[in-house]
Image 1 (cartoon, helix red, strand yellow):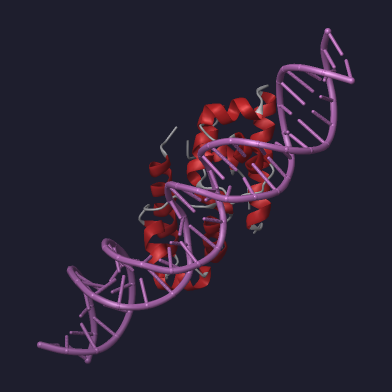
Image 2 (image 1 turned 180 degrees about the vertical axis):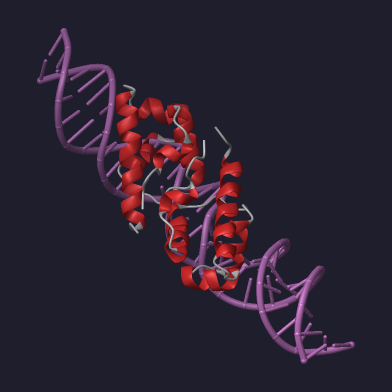
Length: 74
Length: 74
DNA sequence: ATATTCGTTATCATATATGATATTATTACT
DNA sequence: AGTAATAATATCATATATGATAACGAATAT
């Protein structure tokens, strides 16, 4: 079982990867999510202990299903 | 995309289902997770906005991979 | 050189998850 | 009836995610 920090980091990497694939900036994604840009940076960098609420907002704004952020993580 | 509340409720239901299948009480699971029993009740009832940290502790104590709590949730 | 864009980091305030504890309800057992 | 076990709920304290804002660095363009 991966550690909490490892999992938050992995989710952050996935968010960044999806965002970059869609060609939008952190600022733009933050706007769509109604999340502070500084927080979006913390999230993508794995420097926070994410909540379901935040993950839902990000998924929704990126148009990916919720489970995609955690799929396969052990 | 399901709402934050729906997803927290679904995760809570899954935790309860796995716990009951393993035949342990909320109190016992709370002990293993190092989480307050009152909080475990809130979690299973979907009355909190879960963090990754808490989900990791529960999964680890139930011996299920992290992704099982969120698998297939859209 | 200097703006501009993008990401990062720092600081402080606020909202809320969780800890800690007590109380209550229900069920089962004696 | 009484006791024990389990779960639910209420209250208050504490820790921390996030909001809000500012400053900084790097890259790019003008």
